[in-house]
Amino acid sequence: MKKEKVSQKISRELLAMIERGEFPPGSKLPTEKELADLFSVSRMPIREALSVLRAMGLISSQQGGGSYVEERIPTSISQHFHIQKADEESIRNLFEMRKILEPEAAYLAALRRTPDELEKMKEVLKWMEEDFILKEKTGREADFEFHRTIMQATHNSVMIHMFENLSSLYHKVLEITLKQNVGLARKREIVYKEHENIYLAIEAEEPELAKVQSIIHLKNVEKKMDLSL
Figure 1: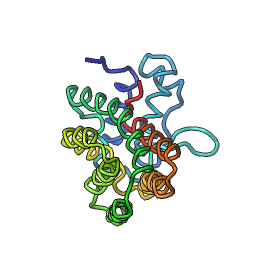
Figure 2: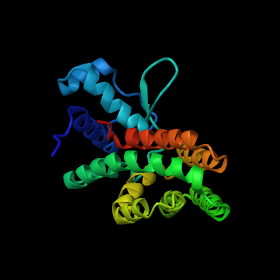
Figure 3: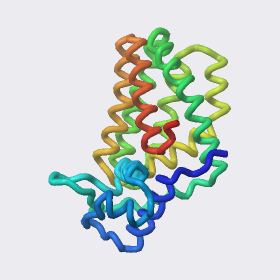
Figure 4: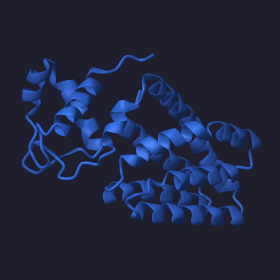
């Protein structure tokens, strides 16, 4: 099993310090050099750790330099750091499979989708949009159903079967990633737009574009989960 990176440990420590109020909402974090001295590491893992916290919506960079703790911290944000090691490995493995399966599925769906299947994708996209408006909704079910409709539009029974076999792990990953965006309208808007771009490419019967939009979406999810290899 992959050993936890130094930057992940630092991210965890910084999160704990924020939760304890050592860095309250709106406050400026120490400089990279100060943090490097604090954790007795070089600046590189500090930068990586700050990038993770930034992607999670915990901190932001402001004009004039420096990183600041967000005024509003999602209560579910710490869930990212509390994934069990076994789960982390299985999630990483799932993403390796998703990068193989989903772009090709989007490609085939753009070639083979029927008018009824396209309408179903549109309905699910609307469902996702409505869920993202409600603060108590993560949008997990709609997100999963969107990817399922694309898979069904491939008309490839083997790919569809493989996707269904992975459904429980899909749900687990979606619950983790989407909970991070609860209450963060801008991040939800970005996630919705990524799905809409895939749909629009499939609607336009542009297989290469659909494939690219799927890859973009997966890369952004990887960054959020800090799963890049």
